[in-house]
Length: 86
Image 1 (cartoon, rainbow, N blue to C red):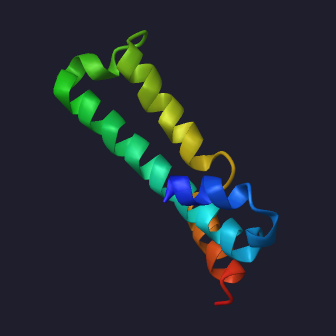
Image 2: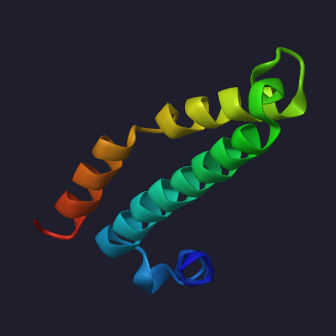
């Protein structure tokens, strides 16, 4: 999906509402995947995953910001559905 969106961004005739909808869905997919990976890393390390100053703890905090930055998941879904005409 990411390769398709990147290719469409280079084609002026294909840019429009459908591309915006795909970008919104791609952002949701990427942030959910990052959250899953961060959660698994914290679970693997157990209590050490929450210790201040560890790399995993920092990634876990940054993922939460990435999920909100640029629009929360619900906002991205709403924007995608509007661009697709729903």
